[in-house]
Image (tube, rainbow, N blue to C red; front, side):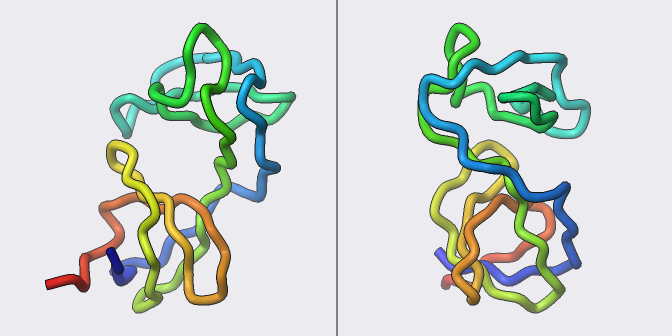
Length: 107
């Protein structure tokens, strides 16, 4: 599915990809997005969806980097996790973007 960015989105920095099996320290629930949690992974403060963690361990490889996009940019959606999309932009960068800032271009 392709989506077009409606509003500029700035991410919260670049992160490495954390391997499946990495320990996750859950801090608290995210106030703005259900099923997402503020956490610490390998010393990085970030967020993680609850379905990626079981008993404090990542259940899959995970990179929390958000896409930095301008209005009008196009993104190919790879996965939808609650209110966030994991997608790849036209320059080939993969990252997260909130669903509220995009609109589908598929009919």
